[in-house]
Image (cartoon, rainbow, N blue to C red; front, top):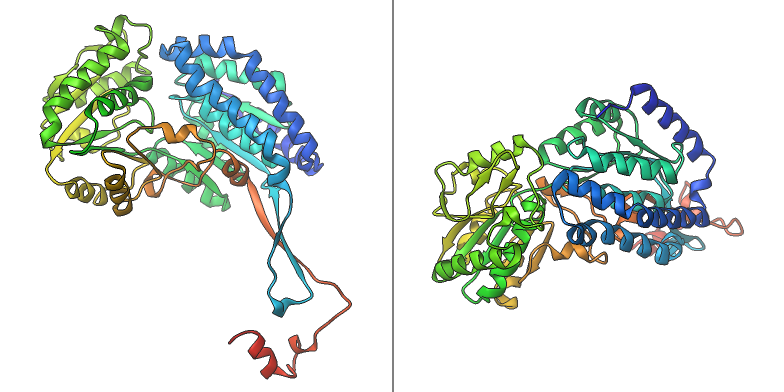
Length: 460
């Protein structure tokens, strides 16, 4: 893929700074018009999006629609319905000591946004963030991953067909383009990707004191407790671990299974894989491929010397790795030291739920925690741990509710988006105090007459 030139990027930035200075993007009717144009464009380009993601990742159209297109369309619709209310100034209480002033909070756009998305959900993760930028009144430059070039080109075509570069621009290319973009001064940076790249984004943003939203990843623990419904747990974990062949930041990364359920779970997990993907996943039309040969090699290395109890087959030319369950995993094994980002699930056993809780709490805070068992015990586990989000008796599905804020904590990310949180992510919440001139209280000025009465009013 050809890199967008530095001259072209600088021209886009200059154009967006000029356009933003006209204040047109602050108009609510303008924002709503752009959101409706955006929605129409997504519907118009749906066939091209489906075809591109099949080429890049071998993903089936049904799964693409559920996890990418429908999520973006629902997000746009949600913003169209609620934008006027979200953007309306909100009155805030004013203490008596500030009488006769009145207080309010207004949300204004931060300005020019840089949105960088990864390759695993290239459409949804780039476009969902753009919804928030448009809704809040920002201009934006989008940067797609070069690892999924077909969908990157389709997205660029859709954006250029819908918006002018002076409003929403698109940059393509490798990390050299990322480096140049991050050297520029933006008003907010929205980045989705690995924690290691997130550090570089935050370091670059610090040069200009630019606010950032970092949607990162991590090792998401999954706990199957003694009270779990094993059939449901096996089905949902198998689905979550094979969704996009495990190439999702929310995938269960390792499994803590109660010792009494390990044999039963192993059998039912294998059965669930067969039920979802057929006896030979590689021949089925619903099982995606690993993004590139380099990633296949990395995952293959993680399987070396592993005790495979389900799956384990690898076909490098086809970029295929079977859904795999491995047992007797030591906590110092390489697979427990990095985010797997593939269809491999390490399994560890426990006798008391405090064992996985202790393990989770001595490692980096994950993007999500999944607990299978009684709801009461699940809430206790969540109370004793922390994560960006969580599910009890499910995996991943909290991301599908746009009423819930989505994001990480610690190394799994900072900032929240989806729904109103997307609007707020690209907004400056501006505090305004309005004071009339018909009363000017003398006690605020030196020599502070009647300070005793003022002190009582201030509750000191």
